[in-house]
Length: 157
Image 1 (cartoon, one colour):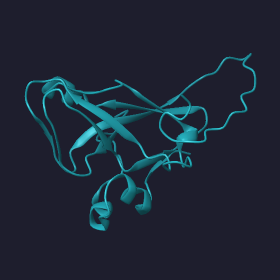
Image 2 (tube, helix red, strand yellow):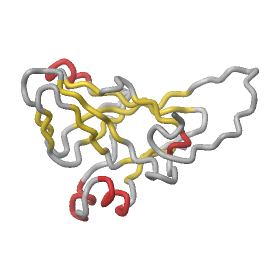
Image 3 (cartoon, helix red, strand yellow):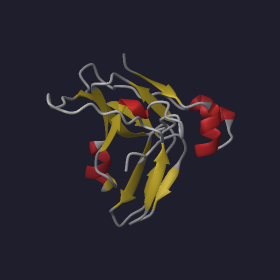
């Protein structure tokens, strides 16, 4: 089973702003065509990136998926090609145990950098990045791992 859902309004207030109307207006990720691999994530509110600037962007979304899958987050190709905007880590890898973690509910973020010499403006409801669900394999002779995730972003060091 896999699906996207909004973070709770309480988490939204903490990470974004106390604005119920804004919370109700943004959309869950969607595929644009029948054979699209990626689910597009949308801009929640307008922002601008100055040349060279980096900014952490909240997506307002969490994702539930199977234990043998990951969610890969990548920038939309058009942002790199047309505007030279990149994700700072190039590719985000989200594991299934990130969902509903105790520190941020599994709220997804991207950190973007404008590597061009012109301002980049993103508008509410623009498509920003995309998520692709991927099955993964583990080695057969791996020792049992007993450690559980206890936090959010970067919590496993």
